[in-house]
Image 1 (cartoon, helix red, strand yellow):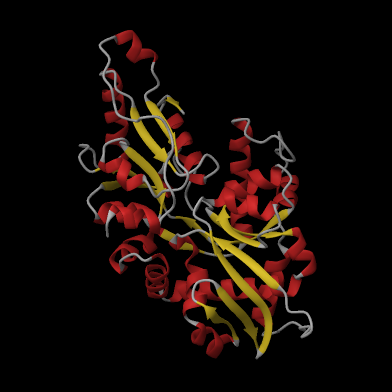
Image 2 (tube, rainbow, N blue to C red):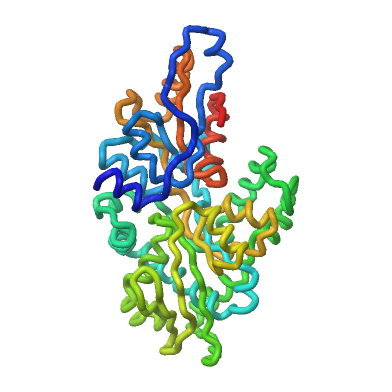
Length: 389
């Protein structure tokens, strides 16, 4: 796959100043210069190019980008997100979630619930057979299966939103410590307030009750809504891809499925032979923050995106709630292939050595409101690595 194709398949590129390393003969200048420059990226599409041209030394990226970089010999993953410092902080960390607008939750409750049911069942199928996620993600993203075979095992797929509550509370605390929250959650540390502001657990509980008791909702045949569902081009959202790619599996096993109208764009959701909703899929290349912006503008009803974009948007007044988890973990720090390090400890030492020589290490991240951004900052701080942005 060419770098250009990778850029199209993944997310659009990084932005920032020229990131070439430069030496300084002044020890005073080296001492005062932060060791690392964090490069603000709008997605991940330019990461292969910027690493290849040595404009970046490393990136923190979500899957499957780390494995794309590895298979193309552009970079090497040196640590996966669950192992980043501070020790133990990121084990089972939440990453992507399903967010629904308050309007959809109020006015299209049945459609939202049953779409969520399909995602829950799809996640269960993935955990029983990871090849479903591998095949569907390769098809949907246009990447080789060999990439997905490396990527999917690093992702923990689950949907119970309560599993995300502790990690989300920690994110809110981190964001408040960085003075990043300015609205509803500014300075808030109370668990119940955070949960009530960000989560609506009722849809998931309804769905689980339906699955357990083999129940189905009453459907108003005269009112078939359209749900506009936005997602990112990442195998983090494999549950959606699997549900769309294998309708017969879900129809035969669960009597709920997506009927394809236009591949990867238009579907109809059916349950027990009845049409529940029209589903319009919207791929968003700019990241989760863009999805939340579209939701605030009433252009999206359901968003598959990261926890931090959801937190930032709801904090600032977007009328929406997290209704389900999607997965945990699934990111990595990738160092350029020519850099002589093979693990996180060696990378930290290399950063310090570069600093002594008056060089600043450049690390790219997807977005300032991404979980990857939060993790790399905390990891650098834990190692006493100074940084600028």
